[in-house]
Image (cartoon, rainbow, N blue to C red):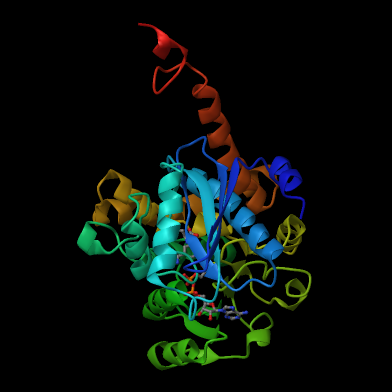
Length: 365
Ligand SMILES: NC(=O)c1ccc[n+]([C@@H]2O[C@H](COP(=O)([O-])OP(=O)(O)OC[C@H]3O[C@@H](n4cnc5c(N)ncnc54)[C@H](O)[C@@H]3O)[C@@H](O)[C@H]2O)c1
Ligand SMILES: CC(C)C[C@H](N)C(=O)O
């Protein structure tokens, strides 16, 4: 990857590479755009095939957060971190504290939270070193684990997409294929089960599958079979790029609505599913519940206020579908336009001079 060329093409502001030999920390903090406010986005810990793959993931996820935060109406920019390592083996106190010090060094340009491979306990360690972390233990007045709230938002957004595809937003009796039953999807399955949906699940982690089978009567399938099962809704809730050339021809679902970030491998796949008449709830619109929840901490956390905002993901998904129908464009394009319009409007309105911080007038005596 030619880093500067990539950054220039997609207009990234900053990439910070962090290394700490003692703890084994190898982290990449990508800040995409801070027009709307400080960049807020989670920290992913994952074993990457190569450094290039880690950079690419950090960059793609950071840009996704710019759009997610903008579309959700938050006054926040987009950023993300990836820590290269195995979350089951490579975590230690020094690693997260070293990482916290790097975040503190950015002086508020970037605020972190949980993502795949990191937990509230990890955020608590980061919090020992910096205030620029959310999703910390409720004991600190924080909002804790964002996953159940993300799940509730996905559930709300899935209902809005179902309304478009099936004429009703009831999920009772609907067959829903859930890929990955981790932190978010476990809670999503609970909502779906309570509403009377029939679940088909898969995961590389057998314990996670067994839990869904036992608690929600889900049917388990092999990881490669989840795309082709007979279902109404496909819910990608593992990692990204699962809507691609190989999987699209297998899909029988009329709706794609799930928690994973970057679900479309490429934009052309969003065009293709649109042409096929599949209702796609854009990933960053439907999975914004977690970031809406942690962002509320910045105002002094109020769970009731945060949940009210998360409920509105139903309306946001419905709005994107409306724009898509009105303008004859795929939903992912409609969502991008909605986010970009907000960023551009704010960028222009901020060109008015405001006396804050150090500037030329600061030299007057
Ligand atoms: N946690 C949040 O609040 C939040 C918010 C927004 C978006 N997301 C996104 O949602 C997705 C899930 O997040 P999470 O926090 O539940 O993560 P998680 O790690 O708890 O769950 C992911 C699950 O997917 C499984 N998995 C991985 N590869 C798989 C594969 N090839 N096939 C089937 N299963 C596979 C894992 O074993 C795991 O159980 C991620 O893409 C994440 O970025 C999470
Ligand atoms: C800020 C976090 C809750 C971020 C979350 N992992 C997301 O992708 O939205």
